[in-house]
Amino acid sequence: MNVELVTKNDLDDLKQTLIKEIRTIAGVKPEIKKWLKSADVRELLGCSAGTLQNLRVNGTLEYTKIGGTIYYSAESVDRVFQDNRKNVA
Image (cartoon, rainbow, N blue to C red; front, side, top):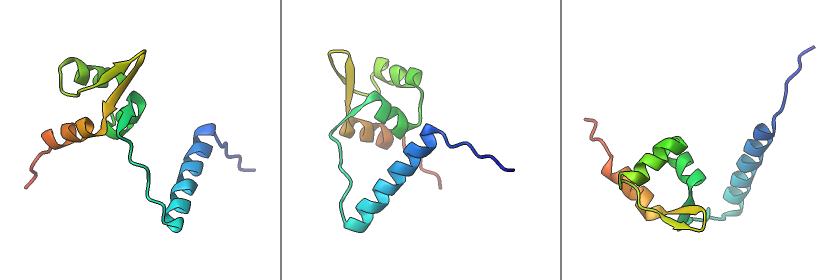
């Protein structure tokens, strides 16, 4: 008897995939956020919380702190990508 476990993360991934597919079929364009929270930026950059903190501390990534929440402009995150591009030729 084969037993497969389905975790909450598996269900969340399935949900996100279904939402994306439904939006594609319906012709709905994904929402582009102007401001991103730390978790969003970590996911985009594929980095840890510590690395993200280092990017803030050394001035590589601009941020705004309101209360206890840190926000990053999507433009600033894009600039980090552009500034760190490598020409592989």
